[in-house]
Amino acid sequence: MRKLIGGLVLIMLLAACKSNTVKVLPIYGNRNAETKTVNGQQVTDTVYQKVPAFKFVNQYGDSVGSKNLQNDIYVADFFFTSCPSICPGMQRNMLNVYNAFKDTSDVKIISFTIDPKHDTPAVLKKYADKLGVSGNSWWFLNGDRDAVYGLATKSYLVGVTQDSTAAGGYVHQGYFVLIDKQQRIRGSYDGTDPKQVDQLIADIKTLKAEPISK
Amino acid sequence: MKIKIIAGICLLTFFAMIYSCQSDASIEYSRYYSAGAVVYQSHCQNCHGDKGQGLNGLIPPLTDTVLLKGYNNKLACQLKNGLSGKITVGGKDFEGTMPTSGLSPIEMAQVITYVTNSFGNKEGIFTDDQVQNALNNCSK
Image 1 (spheres, rainbow over the protein chains, first blue to last red):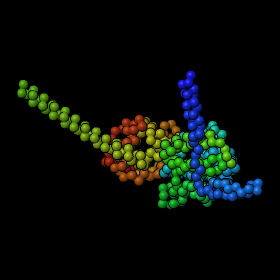
Image 2 (cartoon, rainbow over the protein chains, first blue to last red):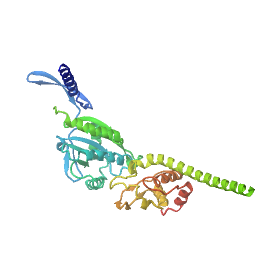
Image 3 (tube, one colour):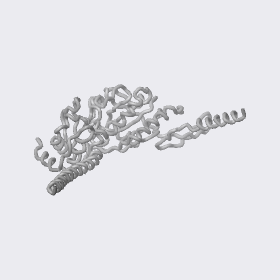
Image 4 (cartoon, chains in turn orange, blue):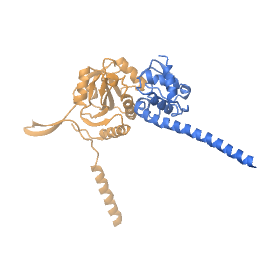
């Protein structure tokens, strides 16, 4: 009997340990300490870098943006449809993310084109069809060039430049950036590496399980 | 008796010669094939995939063994000039653009040997000379 109780206590202790080690993803980007007066008291809080509001056009010709993503976790990447270099491999890997979460309403994928002149919504629709993407869980967005480049480099921290000497005319990094429901960066993964993309899929599940704190 | 022995030795030499020839050819094939695998990884795999599977409706696969039968000369020209316009592979239509490869003729020979002997294809070696010959006769 005593042994049994001892064993039970041990199991309970172990279980307690486990529940304390819930994995939480780090928060990336710049942060500031902000002091506010709440109810007459000085309160200092950390303010994390957030993706600012944006509004572009998706492959269906609908005007969509950050407002439509307020209650979503999403993965962002930058590409162009005529890209001869890293994009096909990236989109092959992104398809794994798409297939894992296409029936999950609060997980989305946002692919921004960095060649908006060529990649009109009609071109993006055709591209999505050929890739086998339908529905609203993966949007291909066309927006003002400077706005998209600004978002990429300042908000998603992905390098993007136009370069006529590069194959296809653009240089861009192949990162997949994980954004939480508070528009904060929670992860960045090499979209050309299937192993890192598997990690991204695992991290999205971790992020989904995280309690919301505003 | 003596004649039999001599005949036997001759026969043996003959077979040995054939055998060594074959192994020379197969060494040459292996050399092309393994070099071609490296060329494939750095120039082709990103689009056409590690198993030659292509990418859904965007990029054609390299697994259409019927199409690739006797297609080597065309492959050489497509590597040299790139490819655009409609093409039917494995019963599906594709209409993207393949950029020029920038490969040297020997690299083309290697990668064609690799591709046409992988992913279910079995076309044998395609040599440097055959590539040169094909390139001289491209329709463009």
